[in-house]
Length: 219
Image 1 (tube, one colour):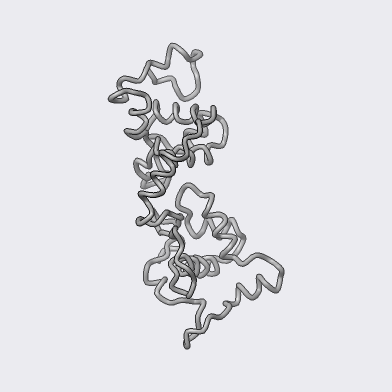
Image 2 (cartoon, rainbow, N blue to C red; image 1 turned 45 degrees about the horizontal axis):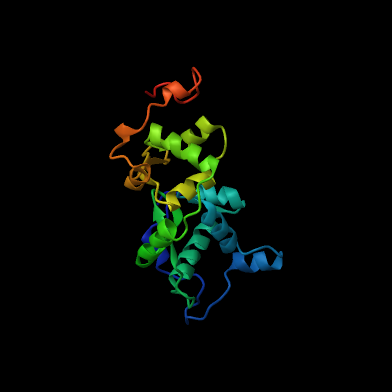
């Protein structure tokens, strides 16, 4: 097993219960409580709630400054917690291992309701930052979040999450070497723009200053 991967076999045992099925605190939970610190699971949960890409165990361990073994065990407990197998209520979201990391996803049985809410019942206008980010993705797709941030010279994490939530962009593929997710626009954007294909998008080069960073190769 690699350091940044937890396999399904590692999730079969529930470290929050003893041999009789009684729920118990594991040592790191007890140590957190004694030190007046939040349980490591809750800290990881908070990080994963705002992450828009799968997070490897090494990255998470570095973020919370805890040993890799503790983070691996905490992820196992979170999976069990979200799934309701440790006596907890099954959540509407799940912690899923994808692309060598961990990310929170809506459970499949709630997809239709969530999609309807995002696309039809939450019709607030896009911010200027979101529109600019959407334009970069539309003209440069497929493109990674890091590349978008480089072109715009600002952090685009929250904006990308907004565009994903609105269904205007999608995760096209994950780079096998860097692990970075590349984004592309969806058919919904075409519908919103009233065009049939990306080929109908207007030329952008006449509107840009000469040598605009990141757009030199656009028509």
